[in-house]
Length: 618
Image (cartoon, rainbow, N blue to C red; front, side, top):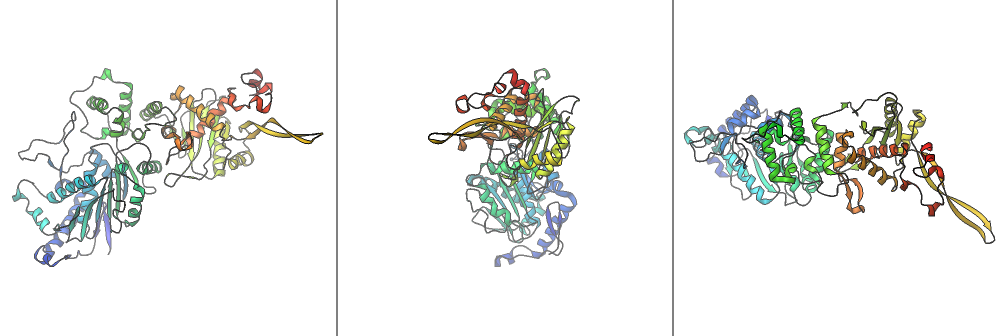
């Protein structure tokens, strides 16, 4: 059957079948000619008016009760007993979603913003009744929530196309629709079956891991995925593969701590941007919602630095915040305390901040992240972000972490990253991030080094790092490469009366590149952690701070600092290498890098820490 797609709804071009018959009772029920005409009328109205206006004229919702201190913006003056029934007018968040909607979407949401209502109407009910033969499924986190969502679905169906839910005389068209096109048959499950359209909409619980398997589904919505018990990835894997090409799939949830399937999917969709790979990413801060404000505003002179930063972020991203909204924020901060960032996020990393096991100071990372969101200081290119341009006669250090090609989380590969810092101040001046072959990364490193006054480049020499170093040295003829001074054991032999006797002696050698070993890796990470705590204003990369917020001590590996599951640490390692090399060049060589006297004998005077000879050598 040839078909056209109009605003997310499949519209058949050929004539709609007159009637689908499930039993002999259907002959005494709906009129097949009226079914055909009503379906054609609704499809034409959808194409003519568009989704927003169509839903306003045909759908009713029961609005939520405003929380204590929350301003009510919907009309409450009504002569009827149920004052909560209102036409479905899209709020500002729903309007933004409608403008960016894809076939597969993932939503990281604040509380009580109307996402579930929108999904039930826009992504399940309307696509099914406008496309004969299409089936929908809503997966809730528990059976109790599935019952509540099914009640919402029945209300939407019952009130569809009514002019006035309280005056039966004005609802002749709606009654005709329910008697013909929207005629339903009984089901012993949480399911609405439209026998004339040969389609159904079900509500099920994620507690059943096999939910939806074996069904033909064109439209699937999964709610509060971050709170699903068991294995959400296994629950959704078979279902996603079974959804046809013209079908839709949507996941939405508030944040629920760090890690897990929903977190990993959000990071993937957020990283790669809209329209790439699987999901279109949607995130809205709490200040998108017009209802969040109080009648009593705060005084401008009492605004804190944190509140001024939030106002700057909001003005750049969405709209200018009022003092009434700041008053609401203060009250919610008092009520929710540490849970405020999860319930009403102000950026899509705060809601995922760790509750324990973080390697870097959470508050420093969070505060600097907000500062950079409010006052961006970058000059952005395709792969390079410049925070500070090079200055004549200044020296710079570049730390480079080379991608090993390993998968991170759900199929995302790691990155090759280079971080440029000022030798004197340690301030981050630029950051390069890409997924290239090692040879190509080497050429880009050479260009970046020349741009910053022939900077000293320190490349991690593990794995693919050797290829990058060879490219820099041989192909690019780049001479200012970091050489790591390390101790090695040399075996000596001498003959005696009892035969040959072995003896070991330590010696120094220089090798190109930075070795990431159990000895040097903790030192480099601690160097950067100390610098971040002392000079957070000199760390300028948002991506770096995001990785810092997900950099944890892995308890399964004796507390080894590394990125959490599904996260990256390439930016962290690159700047850590740069900070370590800076410390070496400035003569702050830590004593931990030198061998113990009893193991290797006396350390030469020129390599004694804090000695004049050491400084001259550096």
